[in-house]
Amino acid sequence: MPLELCSISLLVVIVLLWTGNKRLIDFVFFAGIGGALQAMATPVLDVGFPHFRYFHFFYTHIGIIVTAFYFTWMKGYMPTFNGVIKTMVALNILLPIIVVTNVLFNGNYMFLREKPVDGSLLDFLGPYPWYILSLQCVAFIVFSCLWLLFRKWNKLIRSR
Image (cartoon, rainbow, N blue to C red; front, top):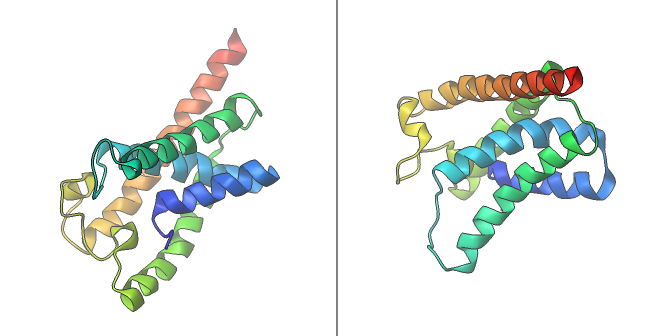
């Protein structure tokens, strides 16, 4: 099932590119960039180079980031703090759905039942289940930093 954050982000990217629905851009920008960067920093893969899934993992995550940049730089999307809030709300709406799915199917989507066996950034966020709350705070901080970074970048570009 495509219930990992980046799988959901990839589906949203496909719908965004297909329809141009601007209501989807915030999710792709904040959850997509934030999730894809974390996933590529600490990948959880069952296969290694040169397996197809190895390449698939990286090109799909890079594609999510490229799509967010495309809508920012080519289509004029400007991230807003309201977009940070909307993305956090969307993720918290998804949270109980993923938790129930994990229980019903003995899954660990979005690592909501346990941390990955191999090391990840979640190791710095405390024990289960507290790391989920810590992750909420980290997500809010990362999304806010993305918003501030692009806000500053846009001001710099406009001043030239």
